[in-house]
Amino acid sequence: MIELSLLALGLVFGAVLGIFYFGGLWLTLRHLPNSRQPALLTFGSFLGRSLVCLLGFYLVSGSGLGVLIFGLVGFILAKVILISSLGYGEAK
Picture 1 (cartoon, rainbow, N blue to C red):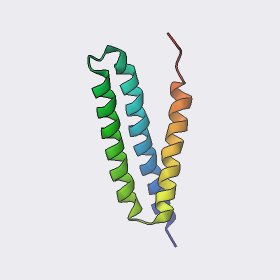
Picture 2: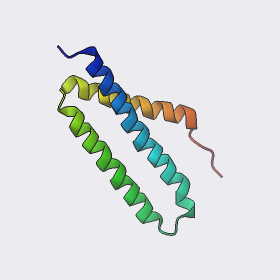
Picture 3: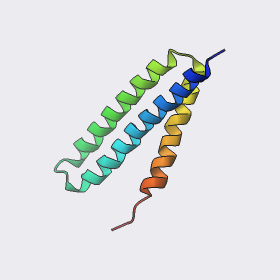
Picture 4: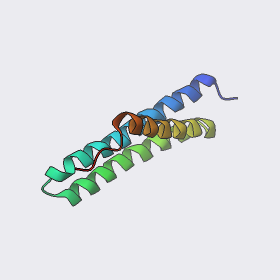
């Protein structure tokens, strides 16, 4: 049986990855109007965030399916928390 501390660690690690991914997306969208090359900024940000998260989840998957599931739950919880704290934004 998987230890509870290992599951909690997976949850925290997933939350950190979620904050990194969705926080990076938020920062990219904030800098997009002032960018000289918005397509490069968008693609580069997506590529960097995706590679870091894929690598992180790959590393977590080595600890077992339960830890991976808790990591995905933490990732989604981070998204929900960031949306509720930052809001959807207002149209200008």
